[in-house]
Length: 269
Ligand SMILES: NC(=O)c1ccc[n+]([C@@H]2O[C@H](COP(=O)([O-])OP(=O)(O)OC[C@H]3O[C@@H](n4cnc5c(N)ncnc54)[C@H](O)[C@@H]3O)[C@@H](O)[C@H]2O)c1
Image (tube, rainbow, N blue to C red; front, side, top):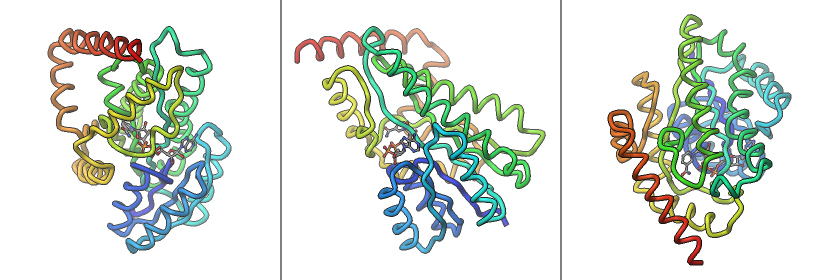
């Protein structure tokens, strides 16, 4: 029976909502995060929804913590069927202002955290012929202004997912990559960037979402069921991606205009 799922960053936002969505279908959950309090809250909510599972602290920057989590899944569940690499942090700032430390921090969590998650769980996924769901972002496809380190990390997640889709087909491991636009979660809490004004702008973008983390979790559940590789939960995102593929210059021009406006706003503060 295929009903064992592991989620990183499950203590908040999308990770928590995905836990609840799969719990409602009777899946057993391995929930990990760096926030013990967040994990406890998610587990309580999962239990209220009739689900069951265990929590384990895991920083996705540390490969040994991910292999320990894989071992725990083997011991407690006898394996794993879906691995969700969801843990992530927010960042912003124009390229000239971002420090190399900002880059290292962003890449270590949002990109290498996913690489390490895939690698640590690959042996278990080979056994179960399971699935990988990597959470990227529309930032990976659109390269919005003043978030180059985030854009690059997330584009890396898409490239990794495409590479795995191709390489793992023979092992019958399915791969999915999710590219949401902005939606309201606690993502701003982790924001790192050179200017507070930029943080405020990201906050406004998160608030502007027409759909919730719960809607997105439901959409992902349905699209994984339909074996869709690239999952774009926002309708506007799907439209923008179509335009980008057909006439990329249109999107570059729009992004450049947006960059000018952002610079003007930041200067005016
Ligand atoms: N919210 C958005 O607008 C948005 C848009 C596109 C993509 N995403 C992506 O969705 C994913 C989930 O983010 P969210 O919006 O639910 O944010 P969130 O902050 O509510 O949840 C992220 C969780 O990841 C955990 N985390 C942070 N660093 C970690 C680490 N090193 N190891 C393990 N866990 C860690 C946090 O403790 C938190 O519980 C992220 O990958 C994010 O980049 C979010």
